[in-house]
Amino acid sequence: MTPRPSVQILLSTLATLTLSVVHAADAPTAPTRAETLAVMERAADWQLAHPFTKYPPTDWINAAFYTGLMALSDISPSPRFHDAMVKIGEGNAWKLGPLPFHADDHCVGQAYAELYLRDKQPPMIAEMRKSFDFVMANPRDTNFDFDKDKNPTHLERWSWCDALYMAPPAYLRLSAATGDPRYREFAIAKWWATSDFLYDQDEHLFYRDSRFFGKREANGRNVFWSRGNGWVVAGLARMLDFLPADHPARPRFERQFREMTEKILSLQQPDGFWRVSLLDPASFPWKESSGTGFYCFALAWGANHGLLDREKATAAALRAWSALTGCVTADGKLTHVQIVAGSPKSFPEDSTMPYGVGSFLLAGREVYRLGR
Image (tube, rainbow, N blue to C red; front, side, top):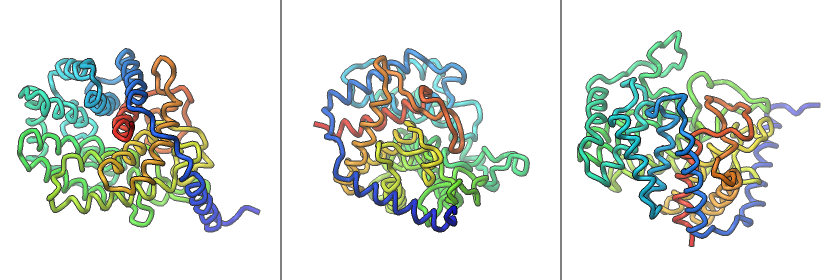
């Protein structure tokens, strides 16, 4: 007889907690910094040599890779990664994507602003500043319903959880670049509007969008997509990177970061990965590297910045990093990346996408900082 959903939930929770305890003590030793840098550079070189041309270079699929490329350029002695990003920005004429209110088209601005903070070249942020000024002067405050038939402007608000990675960190970086707090305060206000709508206060996870309210996985649990929550928790870390220590909103961001990472820690699988459905791993048993990359990044970042229990977060991050590096082929291709989706779905084992490489490089920078 099949157990009732409540029994299934209890059994699943107990199994997850047991696995967390069993594997807490057997984390890999931190790799050397040289080892971490070498695999990061190999993955980045492969991605740069195989550009994703199906979508424009300002598209989020590519822009999420650029966030990782900038992270690599922070630690690599080679200028080639910085120079590659400058070349991309120049090729884009330093413009964002074509849709002024669409969060996905803002993501590329994160790299522009970080380059500006290093190189102080005004053209790097001039177009971005004009775009964000227009958005703030014409705010979109329609509802968050993700049904395009009922709400045709649903993509003009941050109405899906991925948006919290794409746009808010760009606004904070522009605020740091210009000294103008308006960009920061706009992003903070809009973050919490989205969070109030999509964040499950009991599960400490985000629904991808309103279409998933009330949906259930085969085991009766709510549908929480791995990469979707990866976008958010990585976005939290990237917000905190540029949120002043004395800002009144910082404690709330830190609290949400701790809540989410505590939940994420409990859902890591014995092989170091997280499955595409966080609460129903049995229905989606294959390895997945993009969500795992974002969780590895967030946990290692939290350990490095003193926001998480260092021993516990480091152990989980290193298990994840060991799993991720096993997905990098000899020539540098990162495999096991779930293809473009908005929910748990199957995908080929050898699939790769630029955003997966971006999450890998973000994780690598933080593991590098943990290394010896």
